[in-house]
Length: 315
Image (cartoon, rainbow, N blue to C red; front, side, top):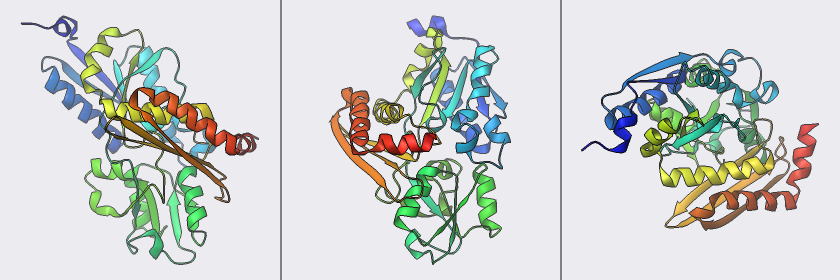
């Protein structure tokens, strides 16, 4: 017997996606999941190049942050050239415009950072003056705090570009998200998975978000089965913390939530870029309190002085 959703199924569905190999993998993964659920829908991927993809010679923190990876995709939604957009959650601004909604958060892949090197098996093995490439202020401040003998150098580009620069000898090691390497079948390049104690992950790292127009109740219902409850709760907690701190690429902060049973534990930090000061704390509560926990952790960090660090960075 047909279900209520059957009468709402569109004949066609267009997914807006960045054109990098990783972004296309992510969109194709969501397309495959949707095809399993709704075999009758014709699904097409609209590949797009975003401003964040085009500007590769400047740090994201200096050109507007990771929101530059989603703007063109959202324009495609507004212009009805696409129905949904697939994003890495860590690229999605903390305060999206009212016209849009994250209709589903997919099950999270490995959220950790990973060391990739052709000569060294761990951060501890890197010698004095070793060059480490990263595009992230969050990673940079943690590295500077724990491994002050290393030289941190800027690294932009997609996963393949960053690996090529490493292989050309420009760096002794680079730090990438483990999730991206695993999704592209490159997990053998990982020399060390960095525990949160060494490198607390970025807010939303490893999770995919599916965005559509807030007025598209039909798509919100269609996408509901793709929402992974545990991952979504963790992401809500992390994003709430970041939002209350005014988090962006310009702010060196990390946030990582984990669920055990009905308890969610959220860790977070705010730091000076040079790693000279790292303020950290954690909170726990029920998954239903995910957003409130994020706000609570933000306030704890502010009480330690995070607001002063953030104010100085804004100057």
